[in-house]
Length: 106
Image (tube, rainbow, N blue to C red; front, side, top):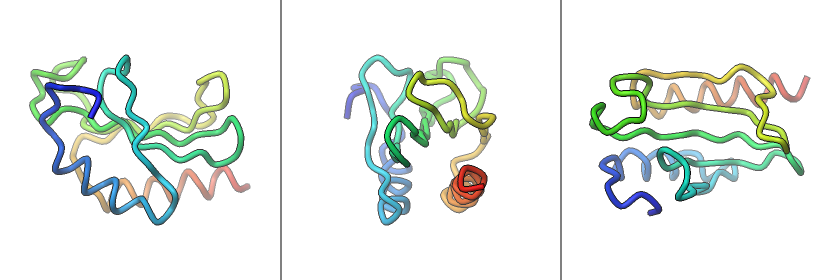
């Protein structure tokens, strides 16, 4: 894990396992504000899910969203509006990912 003070391993691993059949994998990078899971859809197109710290006081924006789901192009620009979720909910993330994939397929 790239973030030594990270306190949300259990949810991160649960989400990673739930999305692995779709091809998602750990995309965490040490300079990001929190660990992430990602899926490269096609070259230079990525869905990335940032899984925040469990303790809101450790988040970059204290008390804000728990998860941020982004669809990014090769320049790290958003292809669709980011999805901000306030709760750690695997089923809700799966629904949002399915919606993003359907939108991008249109």
